[in-house]
Amino acid sequence: MWGKQKIKIPVEVSARHCHLSKDDLEKLFGIGYELKKLKQLSQPADFACEEIIDIIVGSKKFEKVRVVGPLREQTQVEISLTDAIGSGVIPQIRLSGDLNGTSPVTLVGPKGTLDLKEGLIVAKRHIHCATEEAKKHKFKNGDIVSVEIKSDRPVIFENVILRVRDDYKLYMHLDTDEGNSAGINKIGEGIIIL
Amino acid sequence: MWGKQKIKIPVEVSARHCHLSKDDLEKLFGIGYELKKLKQLSQPADFACEEIIDIIVGSKKFEKVRVVGPLREQTQVEISLTDAIGSGVIPQIRLSGDLNGTSPVTLVGPKGTLDLKEGLIVAKRHIHCATEEAKKHKFKNGDIVSVEIKSDRPVIFENVILRVRDDYKLYMHLDTDEGNSAGINKIGEGIIIL
Image (cartoon, rainbow over all chains, first blue to last red; front, top):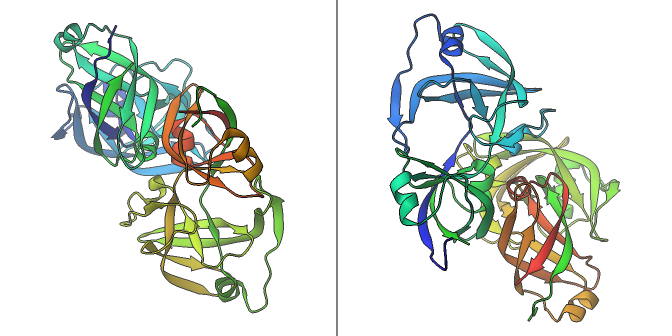
């Protein structure tokens, strides 16, 4: 599929954060509340919001967790496996939006508290890629690749899934455990390899 | 050096912990105090102690950090890069014992507090190997290898240093960031590859 071609890719590390549904936003922040955009993120559709909430996972509480917009069909909280240590909860490693059967989590906002039966995940590492760019490299949505990170803590991440959509921009997303294990604090560079 | 040979290796994840010098042990626990062995560790010389202390790194405090024996020439505190997030301190990634110019750290014991000018590190990933075993595979102390972890979060760790000593047993040691990024909670298995 890829031949011997090596493709450079920017790598971003996602700290713990959450996505909210419209109903859950209103339960946490009040009826009619709308998200306030703080900062555009690398994917054109996504933005960090001014809103922060507290998250309770088992016996652990995380304060000031950033909300990421836009609103989604279902609320989703993303933490790292390190975050989960000592909480009594072992979240599943899932792609964003794949929440069936995931762990329970509690969200605490200024106007209300929400006990969700599912929605807590550790994000599965993935690459965002525009449809045009995917065509150029002859790959398709769902393909699996490896990505080498050259740093003072070099790592090859295997089993990295490609997510292709018209409006995506080419970026790899790791969580904080993965970023730290590869010597990447917030932003770095990888090479897609076979 | 290794040819096409692949060698299975047990992998252990080290949580944050500290090693103490005799002087520092006495400053924290009192004159004449001796470490109490709680549990033998995989390396025959090493043992987890009953003793726990608090560790202060910049603006963060970690409670109940395990002391690991035996006593050493110089006190050393090992945390993960995730631990360091938000502390204002970025510890260097170092091999155990290589402490010159590392970050300051404060240790709080039942009988005293110790402000060290250096001694805080993130452990550089490494393999312990007995001299006999090293001979068998034709490698030597300081050689660099890669180790593949096959799990639901597969990773190849590059730049893994081999530490060879008569009394070592074959084990790879990762910190919690590395373990979590590879889907290993406490114990797993790797394959040494070229």
